[in-house]
Length: 270
Image 1 (cartoon, one colour):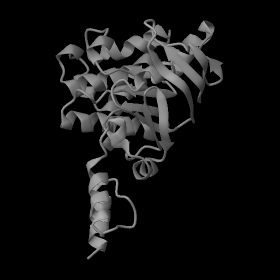
Image 2 (tube, helix red, strand yellow):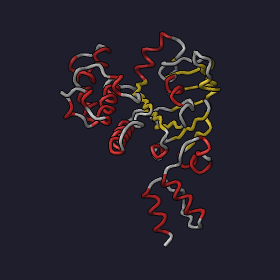
Image 3 (cartoon, helix red, strand yellow):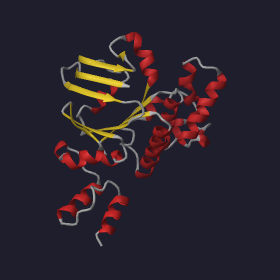
């Protein structure tokens, strides 16, 4: 669905943000992109819906080159984006009005707009917030409303750019659950984060550092084969515990990614 080749990007001040990046994302994938602050991950995903354009190289979405402005409407309809600060995305006075804004701008019939608003609110579990002001909500609720607004436009792919970074643990889990439901419905999901525990159930994990991709594999393989702390990001707690047990001679059948897998491995050591 998304094809990136030899992508380089320089900001106006001359800072090199991306350096010869190659990445190919298939339809229906759940891809996590992780890295320390300044690693280039947000710059990369902003190229996927033509918010940024390459200084060098090539980016295409569904075969449409992002460097050609005539393709931008189709690209941005195919690839929706939810940002770190949801307040900057709100337009409507109520949750319902805000979610309806995108489909209205697509010129859809009123009956279809109502269907899409109801569908997206149900998917995100926010139907009870319909008549409230989005700015009066909690951080987690705001992110769900922002996500519903993107989902109502029926994108083929949704990018979540650090959407959990400012949330409390409960809100973070609620938003992650919503992201998983969206992917389970067949939508391609790209989740940008610096919390590697959010990558354990992804199809692929990409690690970025200094504008380059330094790892791209199944999450379990990335955790096993790379020293991620050297790239300024911490391993998931369960992965760290599993490695500690292995070094102590209590090796399980595999590297555990979740507490359920770690408990299963420990029980088999008895």
